[in-house]
Amino acid sequence: MLRDDINNAVKEAMKAKDERKLSTLRMVNSTIKNADIEARGNGKPPLSDADLLGVFQKMIKQRQESVELYEKGGRAELAAQEREEIAVISAYLPKQMSDDEVKKAIADAIGETGAAGMKDMGKVIAMLRAKYAGQMDFGKASGLVKAALTG
Image 1 (tube, rainbow, N blue to C red):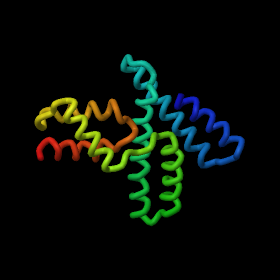
Image 2 (cartoon, rainbow, N blue to C red; image 1 turned 60 degrees about the horizontal axis):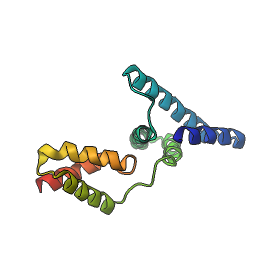
Image 3 (cartoon, helix red, strand yellow; image 1 turned 135 degrees about the horizontal axis):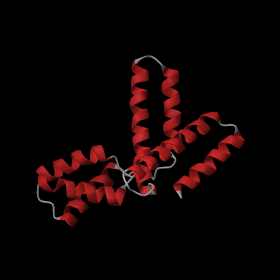
Image 4 (spheres, helix red, strand yellow; image 1 turned 45 degrees about the vertical axis):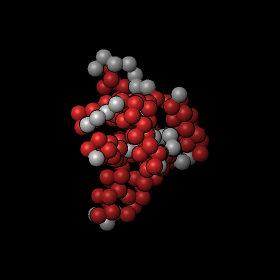
């Protein structure tokens, strides 16, 4: 489903002669193909839409790091280009959860798993990843889970 949306967007960008969007979407398609090849090499099926969301988040994180480096280096035009790519890729992610929604989801996951301490952190994170893939930043979430389990 997500792959079809991206392929249709490539066609639209070609018709509209939107070079930035076109090149970004082609890069996204290339990254998807590489991830599928890697999965196949490990004996797994092609990536599902949920798996693709993780790939997109990784791509966005890489671009955010690039923006910081370009700004430190005084390369505003390159930072702007990375921001445009982030905007194109972000359009395919579900709406991100607010901090309050993340905290509530963590509390619910701790309750459902019966997590009592740090040894149960993996169970909680696994449940959050299954339910909220692409909707929360798991780097931040793991810190919040750790705080909740040790607090």
